[in-house]
Image (cartoon, rainbow, N blue to C red; front, side):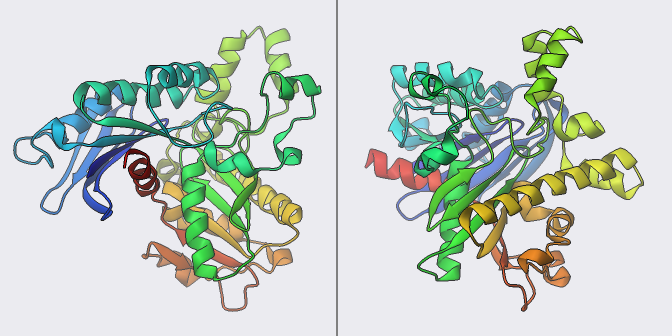
Amino acid sequence: MNILIINAGSSSIKFQLIAMPAQRVVCSGRVERIGSDDAVLTYKTNVVDFKKEYAVKTHKEGFQKIADMLLHPKKGAIKSPDEIAAVGHRVVHGGDSFAKTTLITQAVKEEIKEFAALAPLHNPHNLEGILIAEQLFPRAKQVAVFDTAFHQTMPVKARKYAIPNEFYENHGIQVYGFHGTSHKYVSEKAIAYLKKDKSKIITIHLGNGCSMTAVADGKSVDHSLGFAPSNGLIMGSRSGDIDHSVIFHLVDSLGYTLEEVNTLLTKKSGMLGLTGFSDLRDIEAEAEKGNTSCQLALEMNAHRIKKYIGAYTAAMNGLDAIVFTAGIGENSSRMRKRVCADMDYLGLKLDDAKNESRSDSLMEINTGTSKVKILVIATDEELEIAKQAFDMVS
């Protein structure tokens, strides 16, 4: 059974065509830097390795590029849309409505649309991918896998905000948590590697969107993102944690509308607001050249991550391992080094040589004397989505 996986992020679309249940990747690729004139499309099969820059202004254009490659007369992995049995979609916000993977119906699409206000950088693109997939692959079953599902195990003391109870009980205002597919995948890999019946792990998902999860005995017990995927760590264009008084000051004293504040905090802040760049590769390159704004932004980013490591270690009363994953977590040895520096109080010691030479999908990069394991694990949200979609349709 061929299952096409669509994973639409805030500035990228990743895709894989996976033959299930063999878990064989037929083709894979991504469109990166959506919204720019130098967006990059990559596409790989056993015989094709294609990469080209395009002007891709919208996610819709990105989806069309992917469809064109899949059905390309020479490079394509399929000859007919009917070869796709199911399309698995990553959907960021499922709210209270979806605690598990579900087949997509008109009612499901309407609810995904309703949650767009809580995940404005993601749910609209997730829904757009669903609508386009329905057109391109009309005979395929459409399946939604929700980022919020993994965090359903968080205890009430971690998910509830300190506001009047009625907002939690009647309106569902609470911590939902995100990037759940990634945190679930890498935490399971880490637990298998540690070979411990009981474990305390912190998974650190660093990409354009960033989050951290405290995972005790395989279950999410706390998470850095909340009601919407906007607080917590410093992200590509999102501010992360901010004193809510700043919002009132922007509106009451500086004349901003609420819509302008929302745009400011979700699309113009984070690393972009601090440096003028949203891609960490550009920021690190500029920092090397002596750009002080970029240097400070990197220090701020690492400092925020350290704070959450300390908090989650305290909340779990211990720590066996931290896990770096996603685009930045897996590929930026400099960011990993910044985060792990001066963490002696935890007994956490990075091996610089291992950190610089990481090449495997799962690697231990701590010294032999480190009391806490430092792992780099390549996330595979697409495979996790494929497994859940396969279970659903079969």
